[in-house]
Length: 376
Image (tube, rainbow, N blue to C red; front, side, top):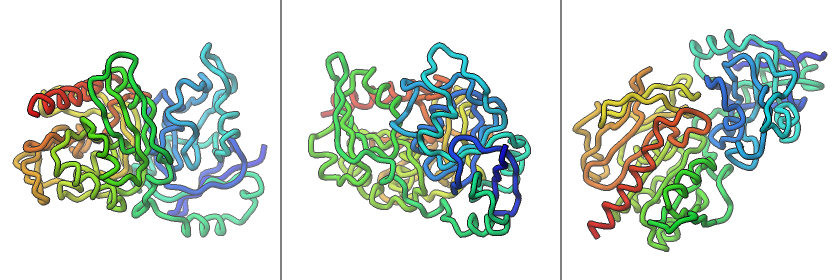
């Protein structure tokens, strides 16, 4: 079998075998720690522009199926696994992972030491990389390294427009609706919408480029900012829209990228993490209850605050506290506004894939909507 190469921008090269489509692909190299849920990872729009390394050694044994997709395509820029399953063995499988990668034109590499690679990234940090197989792997390695080093860095990229819906759409619950949530799709996962529908919320989903006037035109009971890829510092337009939402004291809930944009709307800074949080086994403490949750993550940026309590919004939105913190590195994992109805978390409460410890956050959104209606 022909060789494939994973070339890192710091000059390190890993040799393996082609997996998925043969060719070349460039992106930010990151690792995901989930032992299951590879299909949800691949179809998560938050991974756009990234080459994903699966730290679990054996990938693909349950195949793929349409129901587990979080969007209508695979978004990762490239895929790195150690031992791809030779067979598919699951009653829900409709296709193999290898065939799915080929179908969506995803260049991958297998058969390399993903443990050594992950340890390297834990030390050196996430970085640009390229996968080269087939004819692309026949070029001299110094030329491949030059290609990687000339590629675009993740910092400064705005990718929401790439992954967002192009048209507004509405979905209604099967029961009587208790309210409408206007969603700004920055790379939303299907499970998020399903959680809201299950709580009898009507969702009105808008493109990432929506204006505040259009977003609020139907007088929604709440506004939601989804997860998504890219640098929050490059999302100035979405931050300005959010500030207009906060100005009107409309209930707001944001997750992942939405958490970072709430932070920036309040006047806090965001920064790039060395290697990010990605996987379905990240411990987080809810400081309002003291409960520790095992949570699903996918983010390379975070909100920076000076402390956890007694914070004030530099943009005039009153008191703020850090509601959730990471127990691995003390990273800010949630924000709660004390004077306006707004909160957010950095992780993925829809848990697709992952533990269900944080599903209650959708109930908090419902409670916030009900409380705001009573005030009116």
